[in-house]
Image (cartoon, rainbow, N blue to C red):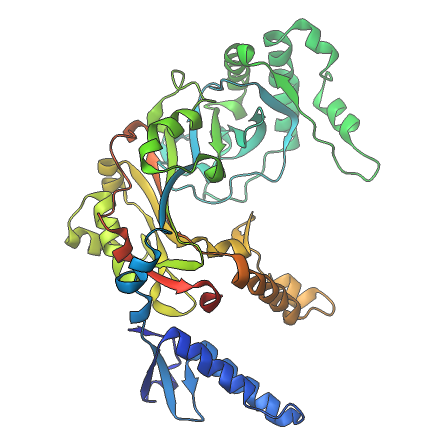
Length: 471
């Protein structure tokens, strides 16, 4: 039985139980039950429809709705009917880590003016970096708090390479750091430029401008924007180039302790596989990295599991969360419950105000992270793709305060109509898959040890909703 979030003042109303399909029919009936030629009656009907649809309140009939999800369990006749359509698939979505070299088996493109717009501004939920202060103290600093520059990318991969500059860390820690133009210029003039000329070939002097200032002037277009083109460092020159580059950087006070950070992300679609193909897909996924050159303890891999059924939205049951976390971390039910009671650790992500339906994300505490190798767990549904944008501080397209207050003629209706139009198209073609991802330390990862084992029958952990019903 799932409740809908309601106002305290409506708590006294008696409950009436609805299935999801019955609830939607009732909501549509309220909306349709008005005289379209009477504006006053239409406004009243729309108000009643919104109140019922969002809060489950039917003040006119004197009750509030309670949703019974019995018909949405994944089991019984539904499971027998859909069994041959259900698929469980695995994938590797991303890999990240730090190094003192460029451990790639492919060429690397270096950006002389450093890439913009790809700074790390959100937590990656991995182990902090130990940073020495001027006073000799040691700080544990999350990666997003270390000033850095996007220095390149690996060949045609979606792999970004950052140069991390821990010597520029300030207190209090902040994500609002900046790398000054002076540091950028010294990095190019005294480190990047000589490393490229020395490591690649003396002839490269004809392809790199002699100073950061010259690069800036050459790249500035008439409209004032910068054209940020890259230069290729051949794979067989990467070892010498990266070592010489860091050597030169470390000679500067701002470059003390500098290192590289790498992230290959968003490759889920190219690595999806059934369970018996783990080893094959893993080899393919890691083929662009030379792991003889890195410390695997400083690298993390995102491993995903997805349950799919054409024509349906498969959502996680809230009462399944404790089982999922318990199995993944291999801890007792009591220890799991303690983790879920910690608001800074466990976050429940509601789905459409159905309090028994939703995903979660768990920031695994240090002790359990050391024992399991898992740093982060998130369970969700792929229906979020309808409003997903990988940018800024949010992963959805959202309305900021400046838009609502400062934009002339701004209307909230424009935003809601955009979302509604997307959802209307989704109801005809878009399924929603139940998905779970873990961020696992690479040193602890073996394809033979099934880290994503969360029970023999994952179907017991899910609800199913017909596509058109959900959207």
